[in-house]
Length: 126
Image (cartoon, rainbow, N blue to C red):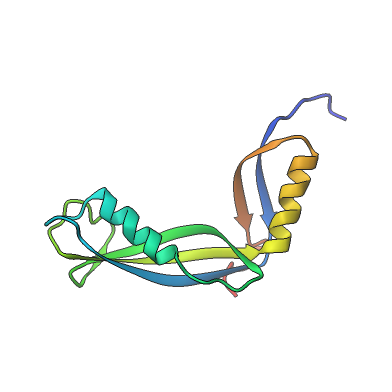
């Protein structure tokens, strides 16, 4: 033993990850896009049925569209009535995730964040 007490960790593990692209669409609540609209479109894009053996780990916005204008990275403040978001969902195997969480708990630590790696330079999308 190193004689060091660890109470918080950043956990990283190599897992087989699958990524999915999903889209969300909402009506803009006022005449310009607000943070509330962005949050709502993220909720809609993440509301998907994943395979029963998969768990969503991250939802990464890729692009926004306001009234069919593409390539927008930050729509807040733009005029429009329709907001769309393309979101990349990163998932992993539920069993692998549960086992890592158990190992962290058995070690009497608290995970501050989870990091995923594809290992050995392999791509993270099958």
